[in-house]
Length: 125
Ligand code: SF4
Ligand code: SF4
Image (cartoon, rainbow, N blue to C red):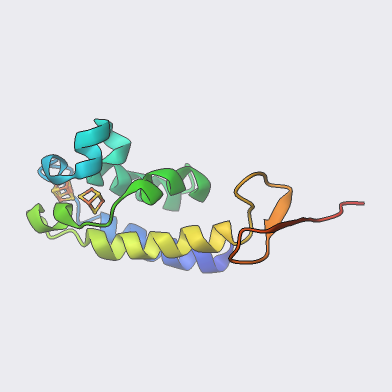
């Protein structure tokens, strides 16, 4: 991971320490109610951000649950710990966007060089 991503991910991870893992937010989360998996819950996403910042998973592994988050912030409104989920989400989306600007959505061999998702093969001699 490059330094720029690291800065944003560290800021996002710092916010996760306000979460006390109580789970009060889970019933308010539409993606959790639909998919019934911890990784699609606010608490699950918060934990993934933390472990990504610790280097246990990659930003790409974090991207799917973050992309599926609706950003509705229902979780934030019910949180007794005032965890700033929306702020964390915005920071992680920046990290994800920076990463995706280098990696093609289809493979790691291509680099996406425009916002139109057009890929050009890098010739490796
Ligand atoms: S985000 Fe808030 S409500 Fe959800 S588990 Fe963490 S502390 Fe509890
Ligand atoms: S912002 Fe909405 S969809 Fe995303 S974790 Fe919170 S409640 Fe769930």
